[in-house]
Image (cartoon, rainbow, N blue to C red; front, top):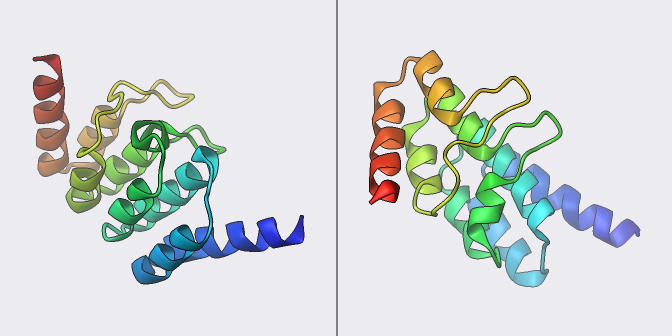
Length: 135
């Protein structure tokens, strides 16, 4: 349906552009499924828009599932944040309990992406989250 496609386009473009206030209006107006929110959060993480992350997570019925949602390339929002070395985005995502061992099609975990990015802060955040979740 054209209306649904338009709503998704608005959600995705707002997430990619970092328009957190627009996202807030969109998610209050319409209920979005886990896949749509997961795709939007991947776009926000890939683009480094930390303020968008809590808006999208708050709209989810299951925030963990949204964080773990993979895009068409098999990457989750955690992978994008770590690949960018974006500790602000990663910190927002880690507020939600989720699988930190999720892998890409090339068997890369978020920790591996963080290490490859050279971001000591992202590596530290992932390792702390793993330790806290193991307790």
